Length: 250
Image (tube, rainbow, N blue to C red; front, side, top):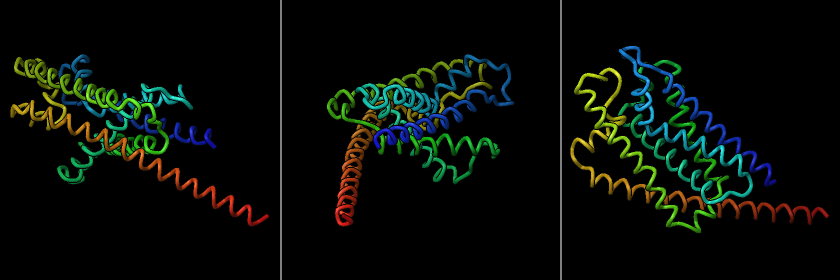
């Protein structure tokens, strides 16, 4: 029974990783036809500035580590799975809000079938599968034993991403002013960075983002524990009823 559960969970997280690979690959190999003097270095910098790309990397890494550890996982493996769940949750939430409330369900940039398929599979289906794996198959025992360590490192990776994008924007801004890469890159990958940085709200935004991440981390752990307990109670009641039915038949 336990072996079947592990295999089922592995299939789900691998499927999520495949959807992530599909979405990230299209972004990596898709070049805007209006771009002149294509530069691979700038293209890769812009590619790694997308939050969704980091989500894909974490999900693929999590699936590999789950496959290698299988039954018993250590703190690092559980943390990568947990961090991938946070990234997927933020990706899903951000894209859902943007698509529904800001873009008014206007799928795709050029409304091509491939672009729409990428948008849906990368930003919605893949995150849902990753979160489903986390809630119903992931282990968090080691994370619960070392909560302070877990919460600390949960902040480290997004902070590194933020500073990477911030310094990258400074570099891109200089290049754009010199008309070197004007047709190659945007200064910021997401409008929220422009809103934060250009209005000089870095400190306040940094604090808000930190508290938001800590809240999401606590929420994911608490809801995971709650769902696991309810699921365990349900399975126990099911086993008791099955045993009672067998006893009555005898």
